[in-house]
Image (tube, rainbow over all chains, first blue to last red):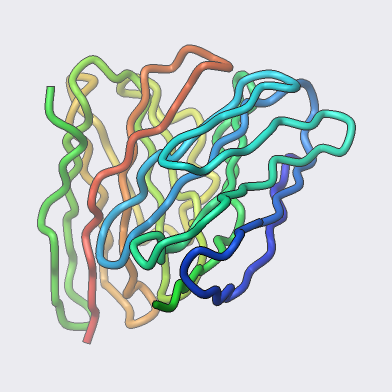
Length: 111
Length: 115
C-alpha cells in the first residue's frame, strides 16, 4: 500500500538556520503531496501542497518540490524562526484513496 | 463558512464509560475523516465518510468504536466502555473530494483522557 517516510526528529536548530525535513513516499499512480504543520496545542494546518511532478508548493517561507524521479517532497526553509517550532507532517493522497500521513517531525528552534 | 469544529475540546471520563465526540465539517464538504493522535505519535486513520456512508472503516481499533454521519454533515464518533489506552487526541478533517485536488482541513481536536 501507499506509505510516507519522514525523518522523525526531533530536529533542533538555532534561529536563522537552514531547515530541511526529508520526506519520501511510495504510491501507485500519481498522488498529490502535502505538508501539514501542528503548532503546540493546536490542530493540523495545511502548510503547502503540490499536485503533480515538478510542482513547487510554497507558503510562509517554506518550500517543497514534488520530485517524481526520487519520490520525494522535502520541506525547506532558508531561515527558521522560533515561531516555526511545531510538528511537521508529510502526507499523500492518491485519487480514490485516503490520505496517508508520515509519523511527523518535531522541530524546535532556539533563540 | 467557518472551519471544522469539534466538541468537546476536552473530555475526561472514567474507565468503562461511553463517550461521544462530535465533528462539524466545513459546509459543503462531502468527505469526512476521523484520526487518532496518541501522545507523541503520528496520525492513526480511523474511519472515512463519503456523504453518509463509510466506505472505509478499516482503521477502527475495535468494535467498541463506531461512527455515524447524518445529513452529509455532522459526524459522531462513539467509544463504548472506554479503556485507558483510548486516551488520545481525536482529530476530524473534512474535504470537498475532487480527486487529486483534495485537501483535508482539520478541526482542533478533542483531547480525551480516560482515568
